[in-house]
Image 1: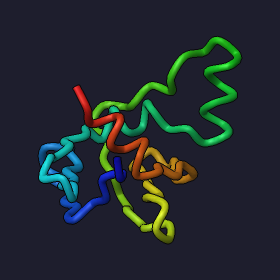
Image 2: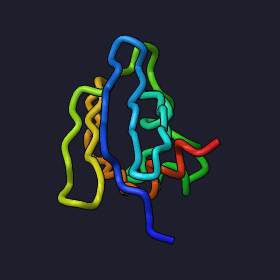
Image 3: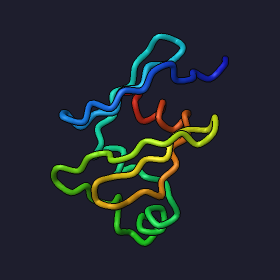
Image 4: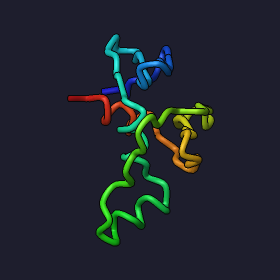
Length: 98
């Protein structure tokens, strides 16, 4: 089975949702807070390993930047200043699957 690739990415800033449409016709709606809490950068992973859990998302947190990382995924920057997380396509798809 071939992995799904994004065909469209829309940031609904007002509602705080990143929507990704995939080549198989499915759509993922990912809340900005969820994306921040599920960041897999080294600092966030270390925090989880130390038993501190997922980094909490501040109220009103929003995506500030969405940058492609080649064909691998997205680098997301958040309104709390965090911008080190690279989100591979497969991970974004996994997060958007109920």
